[in-house]
Length: 159
Image (cartoon, rainbow, N blue to C red; front, top):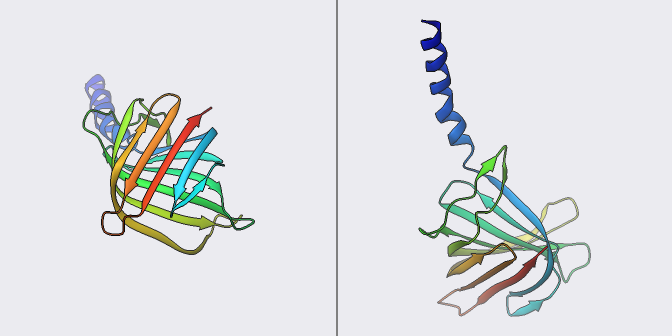
């Protein structure tokens, strides 16, 4: 009887653990990059970040020094994981990309942050269409807003 009770308790806890493992963040330094943001070309990046809030929607962000001293620019591509790509396996909020990954972009956001991590000004969020591709050593994203013609891109080499 006690064995059944232990099995039931274990089985009841398993789905809760599995549900909690589908989200988190992966971040890595970048060895080289080229960004296109609002028709400007940037060639210095600090890091790349991939946030997974659920197993289908991901947020890919590139952190770079801003043109304004003391600020960090964050260019973010948000989209849905391609059906042929696997979601990131996560544990305790830390994830590891399951390369190769493809992300169908639907939104791009550009924001600046101060040294305390607080947003400066208003982030610019635009509907966009495009694609992000992640391999073990590279990340490439390209998106465009069809009504304004504005384009954003990121081409990164990972360390």
